[in-house]
Length: 451
Image 1 (cartoon, rainbow, N blue to C red):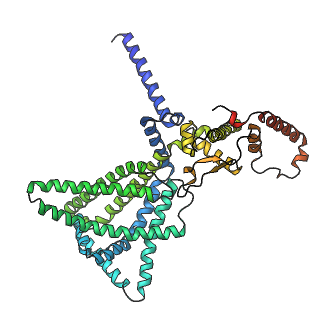
Image 2 (cartoon, rainbow, N blue to C red; image 1 turned 180 degrees about the vertical axis):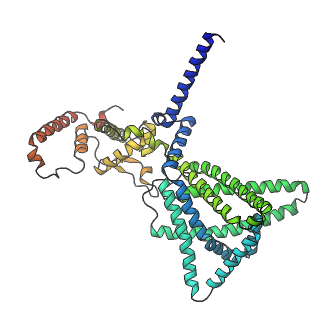
């Protein structure tokens, strides 16, 4: 091989390495300074933010905690499902369906259902009825509360549901979900039997089975999407919840197939350990399901909030002068739009339309609201960041100087004893600078500035 060719190959290799390093650096940090909004950039941002949230959120420990609490709630949950199933005459149907899905653990499941029947018999009469029902609902509500707190932590929601909303929402879940589960089992059997009678051709049977498998998968997707929308104490958009719902729902179906296959494999090849294989495999399966569910929650959060992390490192180290400029720009935009009779915008709309980082202008709009310069339009049923913004003062005479003066004086001041007397020279100099800035700024009204 001649030397020029070797040299050219080395140059090409170094160029490839530089491109790879540049791409890695872009994915790690520079992507947040990219203001383009296309699927490639957004996908890298979602993966970046999801990975960071997963590593910093300690999801493994949270999944273990939820798996343990779920294990404690299994018997009360089965008792609630069977109690409602009795009312619909479907208790035996539910038992048969569960045993058919776990044939290798039929004896263990029958033992579990005997415990459930004993639990219900004891709770149906005597002094134990009140204590039993309270313990049942406390166990399930405690599980739901911990699930909500975990999702709120992922979504960085500082405040959970109120006591009244906890009672109403959780009781609705605990009552409606078992009813739907009982009815779905009965409807599934009824529909499969009816279709078999209507379509007696044997070659149609595989198609019917595939159809019901797909319907079951679709219900799983919608279940997880609904979980990501309803559990966090914040508004989650459906388009951001459906993709994680599909990914996690499919993963859980694969895990379920592996769990059932593991049951059959252990029972077939290990007669001694096979009778006890249900518990360790069930615990592993449950922890993985919760881990995948939390990963889906992280992915959902990242898809909805990627714009909040643009220029994150720069904003955390922003200078006072640059922050003041952006605040004046936001107030000027709102004043000019109001003066021209244009529709009011929300925070996200302002950030998108005027190419401003939402995580930068959100706290500045809050400051302007505290100074009684802005107001959020009172819109029932909407959170504050979804409400349009409008001026709270007469903007026709609002000057840049007055805005700067309000920004400089917003917050606590003059709280150090004898500061003005001990540092009188500094006070005089800073007052003169502030007065000069105010006088110069008073020459320009906000509505006269071109945006």
